[in-house]
Length: 491
Image (cartoon, rainbow, N blue to C red):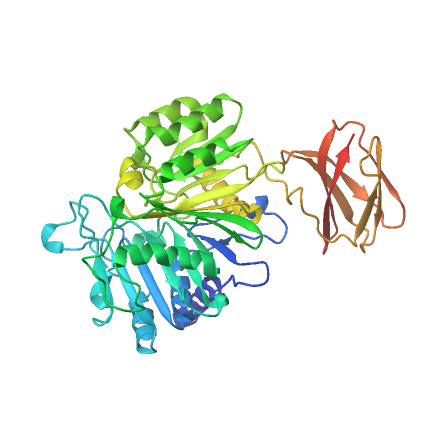
């Protein structure tokens, strides 16, 4: 194959991947991984999307959606592929400048950048700012004792059409290594109320509310000078979403309460973990029979949380030194904790954002955090975590695997009838599914496979469940093209 043809196919594949997910009815939260995922733990029709070296292209797609406003709060923006870890970054500045040219009003808050001072004392390069239109107003944080560490964009947050409002956040800086080599996660919301909450935070730092207007440095508030959030609970597609900003919302207290809510499993990835208060609930959970798995970056070594968790978790805590099969050099830059991804009687949730688990993040930095109570989103994060754990551990599987569908949900209810429910001894099953190869699997509430076998569409099938203990179970029925999932109770 000619080189030009190969490059065209590669570029087209990247384009398709970059726009793979879209908003739709009941689908207003989207998440992405910047590294490979493991879909063997996917719930039906809940495929996680990996933006392999093309998260920047996806970002451009969202910038191109802007009709009215772009409000950007970003720690660092670099398009120079020779800086730091190297790698490809698409021309994000062109999308920004094109948006400005078509009349989009843009404001940009960033961490201070001054190459004459080096990169010490909270300075970041932010070389990419040199390429954006000079008429776009920007504002650096003035206090160098702490950092403006946010990574969020609000698209059309004040639009009169609530479908236009989008919040892009997560932990990824706009840098070559962050996009192409490091472990990062991105989460995006289409929700006007949440967008307004982010805008209220942005406006405190900006010192003004005028769309696209100049900042008011005299009124700009950063760090501990900001006012606490008035309302931080939202419901998107019926799912609870919490949104907190550091340092005014005491995010560490929400991290701790999230960890303490776990019933069966906690999974975390962490770039910087130095705050002992956030570590104690994890150690306690492990001591009380809750499965705790973690991947921590090398930057955590030497701090008490790493020592505490190493002693408590043993082989369940991995130290990141590259991702075999993806990129052997880079950092684990994600900062998230996942609660009960496989426990169907619990409240699966993911806590993520820009907030490292450090004293500086909790008491001085400008950070944003979201906690999403949505089992589908949690399962997509779990697909990424599962892949990371397998790769970093050299093939060690997690001891608990996820059941395919939440116990409070059913699918294709017209395809299968099963009775009685509750049931004592024999579960009767009739089918409205074509084909001779129809199989069933039964899982308990922890996700453990308990029974499996073949069904016949011609008859009333009887499944002997005498070996099952009392409790709630999930029945999954599949042929080559369709599947059914429903719950039943064994008395």
